[in-house]
Length: 222
Length: 222
DNA sequence: GCGCTAAGTGGACAGTGTCCATATTAAAGC
DNA sequence: GCTTTAATATGGACACTGTCCACTTAGCGC
Image 1 (cartoon, each protein chain N blue to C red):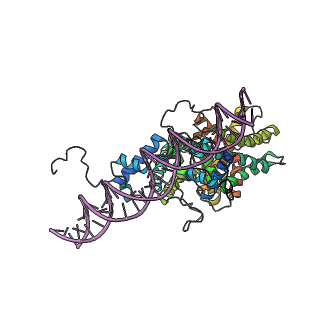
Image 2: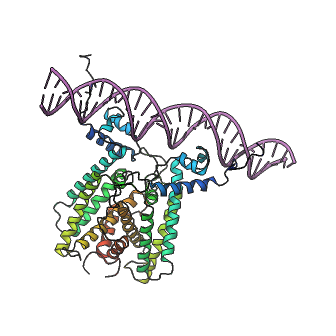
Image 3: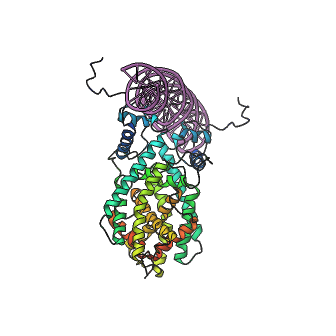
């Protein structure tokens, strides 16, 4: 059939299968709002055999790790765009938080995957070679997550420098704690919203606003 | 063999299989730090056939829902115990938060399961009969979660009544927002600690303390 | 005592993740 | 240009899964 290569006669080698697989998986996560889909289904979508993915990912978990990393990259860009041009740290912080929660709410499954245990190693007690500081998550996802967090860190630093926050701009520990507090609050709110556990009928943006106000001004009387 | 029922001749009917299955699953979650174990493995542990569980749970997800509910119950009791006898709301809040994070850190998989998507319905777009307010989680787990949250609500209410918090004790919305802010922060911190994403070398209790201080006193200069 | 029904059993089926041997081809070395 | 090589794709196999089905057992109300 040296001639019959009319329709869908794809070449033996895909050429860019790794990216194609990640994109297919990303689409599946979005559609099914779950990552229980089979690796074979991903392969089908990419138009390759059920074994082709193993040339690019040693396990299904590896693929999911790459998907999570893509999610973190998207989140970072979204936050960056949201705070672009905003000078006042308090305002930037609020915009950043709103963008963050929105991203999570728009694709809950992807957000859950980014922080989920699906990435953690199987770990039947005492794996070797994993420090307690990495929890067995793929390096790719960790790095992408750090990139996203950096956006927050920078806002905090600016606020500290300007004196808008009661934080020493030279005290690494204080800065780190402040960033962690903010991330915790926003991350937690995102999860609770996703899980429909807020127990509130207020709009999401309103919730974010109130949360950040509490964080900035505190619960105790001033 | 009317006589040979010497060893391990269990009766045909288990008697309390439902509870036994939940306990076996709970143990498996604790051991494997994952809920990818098979329903058949749970059945094996309970000493019944691979189909017996279906008389008590219609799906694997149902079992996991019951496990999650048990987790919430344990969390509630733990928080209750931690704040027993503490009068000052601020102190109680701190003790409660510490207990909460500790519980999550001690059994990360269980904690993740409680909030995880494993409970959410498969939901390939637009399920019927599920309002956007329930996200398809089993009622049992929802109720148990609400019970745990009530502990927090009560502390906030007490603080508001005493004037320790700048919240009107009669304003339901304000109270709700305050509780949600606290839950978000603590929930978020727990998750970040579990995921080893805090980026801090401080002890967990210290992190909780700092987080709660920020929440109580705010980031902005006083 | 007797039937009803809840609670147990084993078998079956399609589908999964992953391993293996094999085939195809792009790229590197001569 | 031709050949070797390593990367990439393929199909088959295996043990195992969740869930369905038909069937058996035995506790409980009449």
